[in-house]
Amino acid sequence: MQEHELPTWQGMFTSALADLDAARSALSDAAGWLRSDWRPLGTPLPPVAGTARQDVLDQIGRLKGGIDHAKNALWSALD
Image (cartoon, rainbow, N blue to C red; front, side, top):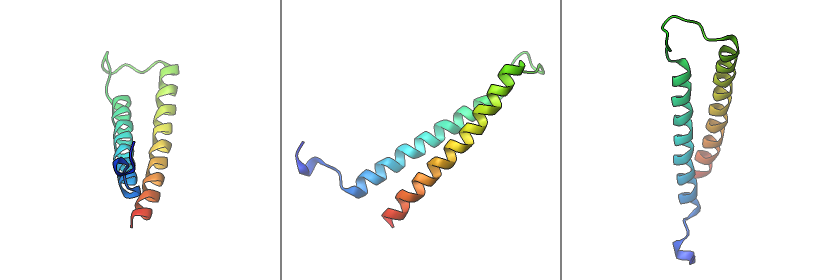
């Protein structure tokens, strides 16, 4: 690859921000699935599934916080 084909550092950061946005959006989609209704309607989740569901929702929250932290660092560098 030749130097003129490489991105600028601003281009690298902008591309990374777009991918971080996509990752955050995918996490939101996964959380949405875990919060949705299931069938048979009105039945509780089995205990192991309920615990796993809550654990994953908690982890998604932490991951989204980490992504936000990373995005803020990139935005600060771009300003």
